[in-house]
Length: 302
Image 1 (cartoon, rainbow, N blue to C red):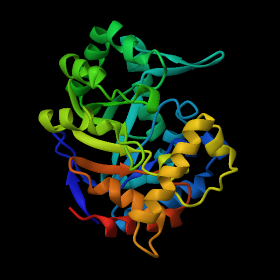
Image 2 (cartoon, rainbow, N blue to C red):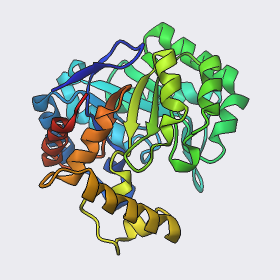
Image 3 (cartoon, rainbow, N blue to C red):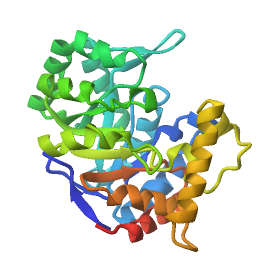
C-alpha cells in the first residue's frame, strides 16, 4: 500500500480509503454489521487505513457500524468524521452552535467506540452552509479549539459539498482558513469534475492542507457499471448535463483509458495521481471492492 502525509496533520494515510455514506441507507442500501466487519478486516489486511464518515449518515449509523467493526484495531485506522447537522423533524438541519457541535462530537465518539477522532470536518453539505458556518464561526472555533485541547480530536478540516457547493472560486475555503484551525480539506474531484483545480487545490498546497478527494467515479459515470437508463444517473443531473457527462465519459474511455483496463480502477488511480491529493475515498459496500480499489494504485504515474 502507498502512504502519504495528510498535510499539516502529519497523519500517514493510505492513498485510497473508504467513504461510508452508503453504509447508512444512501442509495437504498443498509450495510449489515457483518458486512462492515468484513470490509474493515479486508482494509486492515490491504493496509487501507483511512475511513471517512459523517454524523448525518442516518444519524451516526455509519459511525456505529465502524465502531463495532474496528474493535481493538482502532490504532490501525485514521478516522475522519464530520459535524454540523442534526436530525430533526422533517430531515437534516444545521447545527453550528457550540453546544450542538460538542453534543454531536460526544455522540460520534460513543458511536465510534473511541475516545478520539483523528480528523473532525466542518460539513458544508446543505445549500445554506457556505454562509451559515461564518454566522456561527466563533462558536465553531471555540468548539474545535476545546476539542483539540482535550484531545477528543487530533485535527480539524472542512468537507466541501457536492457540485453546487464545490467552492470553485475558493471563497469558502479562503475565509474558513482565516477563521478555523484547518489542517485538511475534502472536495469532489474526479476526471469529469475538475473544478477543485481552480482554487481549492492551489490553496491547499499553499497552506499545506491535506487533500481528500471524494466522488472519484463521478457518481457512476466513470464506474463502467451503470447503463444510460439507470435512475441513479438520470436523477443526479438534469438531462442536458447528463448527456454532456455521458459524452465526456465515452471520450475519456476511448482516448485515455488503456485497452483492457477497468474503468473504475483507472478513474480512482487518475485521482490518486493528481499532485497534492493525499487520499481518494470511493464508496465501498463489499470487501471485494477494496481489492479493486487497491489495484487502482497501479495507475498512479506520479
